[in-house]
Amino acid sequence: MKKLLLLVSIVTFGFSNSYAQDIKFGVKAGGNIATLTGDVEDLKSKFSFHIGGVAEIPITDKLSFQPELLYSSQGAEYDEGFDFGGISANSKINLDYINVPLMAKYYVIENLGVEFGPLVGFLISAEEDYDGETVDVKDDLKSIDFGLAAGASYELDFGLNFGLRYNLGLADISDGSDDKLHNGVLQVSVGYFF
Image 1 (cartoon, rainbow, N blue to C red):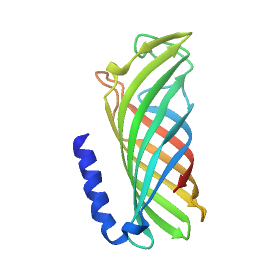
Image 2 (image 1 turned 120 degrees about the horizontal axis):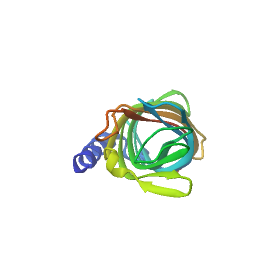
Image 3 (image 1 turned 180 degrees about the vertical axis):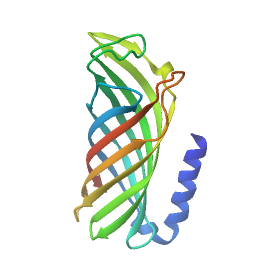
Image 4 (image 1 turned 45 degrees about the vertical axis):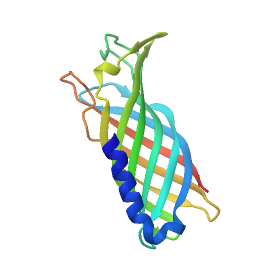
């Protein structure tokens, strides 16, 4: 975690020298349509949310570096017989992450940008809900997730912006199980640059 924060700080400082007056800071929030992929069946998407802060650091007129720090509620719902943490059938997995996307943003036309970059997620809680009972399953999952994120955003002239992004989990988040699990999250967001 310390190395990641140091890397973000160095990159941010390095990119900000020539465009320091143009750095924008903002906030964003929105909805998640999350699921888990891998060696599992009978999954349903879980609707949840994300919220956090964002910075945009211009590199050229068309290219920017956009680091973010987001709380993201993820997971999935199961219709039948998936055994996770000792509970099976009709359950919901609630995974809470602090995600750090490090996005490159390229402006295709004025105000419309496409985004792509790596994403690191830090698991802060993991629970399974079934029939009114909640079980902590954090010990069954790895504490760090890694993936790629890609999407697009549109910014109005006064700072309001809209985004659509997909986060593809590349790391197996299952810890100590033969079943592989990967996060997959579609995000729709609204933000504002100050």
